[in-house]
Image: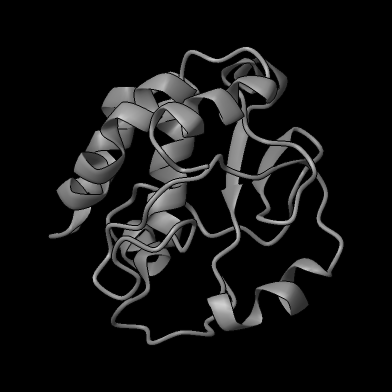
Length: 157
């Protein structure tokens, strides 16, 4: 965690507090790192390549600076999703760390865990409701090329 936002609104801190995630100092090569600037999008088959998911908790205002640093691991961006959090409600790809981690778990086939994580937030159900169909579709794809078709079906392109 880079502690760049209001600590009262920090979803990563809340997840650490409730024992859902751990704060780490070092990222290993066996980690999947959520990186909004990655050239590659998360696919369900990525689950077989890693044993840990890492969400870099930082301010959206400082993402370029933060992600210009070198991080080990397999870097993946999430496919397009709508934020359900009150700060960036319905904005495309402006997710909190909790939303990003939940979406990742969902796409990787860990749906129960993804929903349990969202239950810790009053607005967690909103994120799921906004993206339920997209998450279901994304959790079945085998290629990044399929994302454009899904987005077209939902009127995003």
